[in-house]
Image (cartoon, rainbow, N blue to C red):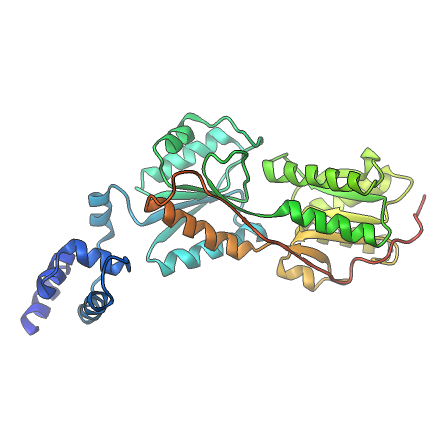
Length: 355
């Protein structure tokens, strides 16, 4: 063992070195390191014990050259500073590290062709696949040539927070349709019928789908259909504040409740209402989506539909691994459940305000 250690100091230890020491092939060693079910527990234990003694570190460059790709994943979201995607990508990163992969994160754009260029650049780094949230504006999008090529080659691609119908890539999202139903059923049970909706812009697929779900559920309960009750906003608190200001100026008959696309937007709406001395929930109720931690600590705290953001990231990586191992014959469509969290911002509908 001493002579072997001396040689190890001169050059980097390889899988072949470990295999020679244990009388195993480098393929068996590689499978053992990946915890492959074909390899027995005893063999895995022998391999792990020796690599710990030798302080073996995988040669990622060599692995990429042999396999044609690295254990590097390209991750692209609209904006990693947004709490929603920050939490999703934390789930991805934690899952990736536990599996001895690495993720290269980048912010995307709202231009699909530009997004394709970002994917091409990452391909130059020999990524093994992508976990992405592309700017699709339709449930049946026309794919740019580069993305169509990825699909046709069965290259591992997992979409997050996108629900295409039918799926063209693997996709992991939350059950927003059920979430919207929870919101509308809750408001209807408390006597609300004049309900405003703060949507997002631009009209990306998840934003449009959420709005369509809102319209269907509101119609089911015969809510007011005043078009002025629907306003759009950038998906941040400043956007929510401005949307609430425009809403309040546009309608004489004030809503008894406001539904916001996200908690971040709802925080801006709440600040406007408080600035205007409008009591929440005594005069108006407020409810939103995502379940980010900050929504629990506003005053009043915001009732929200909690989305399993971290779990979306974790599940996206598990689907990615399945795609890498060719387990699927068709695109996977994973929809995770959501949960309504009642808090202080929702109450019984009061008499409608005017003026």
